[in-house]
Image (cartoon, rainbow, N blue to C red):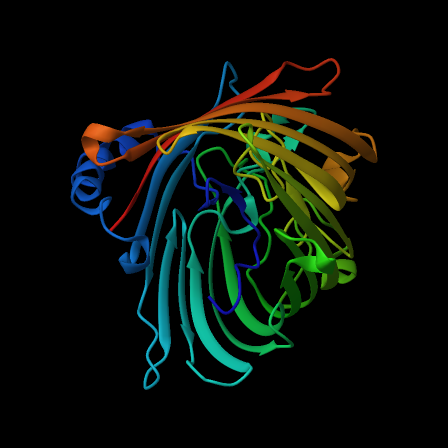
Length: 388
């Protein structure tokens, strides 16, 4: 893709994940396994660079909790072969979101692209409204959106890439089965979003490193007061700054370590433009917590992982997450501290079934740390992946 998804996504084992309504359950996940196993059996022996299709199916769910929601992962990606006489095409399905992306194939340092995206149910992540670990069902809602964008990329040198994207998006909102009778939904609105992204590999002369800086400026139209925001004029326009640095190192006989440092700040952020922390499916992943449990206007986060690779098909992963954040300035969060810090630990397994051409079973169990006077947070993710 010329440009990555602006909503932000967690990433594990090279597979992107995104929020999905809890109406999709583990039963739905199991229904996909049989065809996926068949596909994997005939495709895992092929050379990776010849495989155009990527699939990941999984389910992430809280353990021993009535408040957190489960998340079904359905990821499918198709990439066409680059050709000089036609645009490069990429199609991505991420559970509740569809992305269609075109990029011109040129021999210069410039790239041009355009695309469309649509999202059902999860626009605004309105099902994830928590106060002190309790999901406030009566103020939850659903949302859909449809958008189109144009993008320009410039390769500054071999390692540095600068991207600009302009997005127009329309969103609408409606009740779910838990929404209170007197709850005032957010107004349907459109957004104009300008995004500037600078990224590089081998950043600052460090091997196996990635640096990314992103600036976003958004303006909403047809925006008005609603139940959780009574000062709509202050959030009609907003601004965001996001930075990340990822460092990787391989160790003889003891695997590979990865450290990711992220910071995100902004002005006039609200429930739709603010940052989301918590759980593997969250925008900023902190293991063990509920999906998007915390809504923030400022985030500083460290994600550390280490992979022990015993064989090509057997791997053990350890995860540690630490986050300091400042909550959104919204009425429903008045009873909570302005800022907080949380930690998470997780253990992951990657097991390739050799009798099924290496079909990988991926599992991860996590526990949240640093939630005083509240129940422990735990989550479990199980998934399978294939390429063909």
